[in-house]
Image: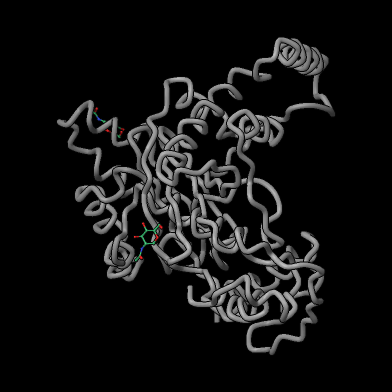
Length: 379
Ligand SMILES: *[C@@H]1O[C@H](CO)[C@@H](O)[C@H](O)[C@H]1NC(C)=O
Ligand SMILES: *[C@@H]1O[C@H](CO)[C@@H](O)[C@H](O)[C@H]1NC(C)=O
């Protein structure tokens, strides 16, 4: 019973967002057949775009990773760039809690601070340098990743799908500027029009979940996606700098709802590394994960593991021990058993997969027969 109500709520949420974000037809409820009318596109997606490799970037708390999804289906990890001290500080500082930037102002001081910041930004722009130090830091990370791609593909890379965690205080204008400085832009889709992809979503795609098989035909793809059932998932990101615990309802690889998000910098792998005599460290991790997952009333069905240390045996053991009576424990090993699974690169790979699809798919319309020569439907 609880499960059904949960499902109904999710489908309801999904419908609402479809409308809010301007999809022109609502998704039918599960079980109903699709009654959506697709218009014929005016043009065709150019053959170069259909065949181009998909470029995926994931920015984690302390490093960035890059992956390419080729047209023949092969996905490769291109490399990793270590974050500078400034980068790590930025990722930590801008992750929240949310702080309002700009009007309306709560106090006159807020207004002065804001005006001062705008003036500083403008002055820097006049000098021809990035508006803020943060923009410079981000663009330096992105440029280094871009260089890895160019080295790998011997091509210039422009369009990317960027995966990152929710960064409450990263201004969209700053992210866009950082991408501009590194000569890249975000690939958009009618299914995901603005901003980066949440890292739980890209990891989901990287695990081969929530993505349709017939992506080159959006009509078939959407029919497939309608049959996906929402999964309440526990997403764990474990790096040298932090442990992030999230409960996310995954609808598909581009839509999810976050129920709970907690970050523990005192439970990072680094904390352990600096004091390996700490007898309570691993048990504390287990306890915090359980406490966080209990904040949602519904059972957890899937586990998403991300980050360079997420495959650490002691980490998995403590989660296993702690969740033993609340989760079907076999689930824990499922992502790890998928061929080629790698927690460090899974989000970048998923971002590459989405990049491949988004740049090669149509925008809310179906191609006329005359476009067929541009595609081969094999992969
Ligand atoms: C797929 O294409 C890439 C790039 O052209 C190539 O490196 C790789 O070997 C190919 N994989 C297969 C299975 O053909
Ligand atoms: C061990 O680690 C936990 C979690 O980081 C921390 O709360 C605790 O204070 C540490 N204990 C000691 C003795 O340092």
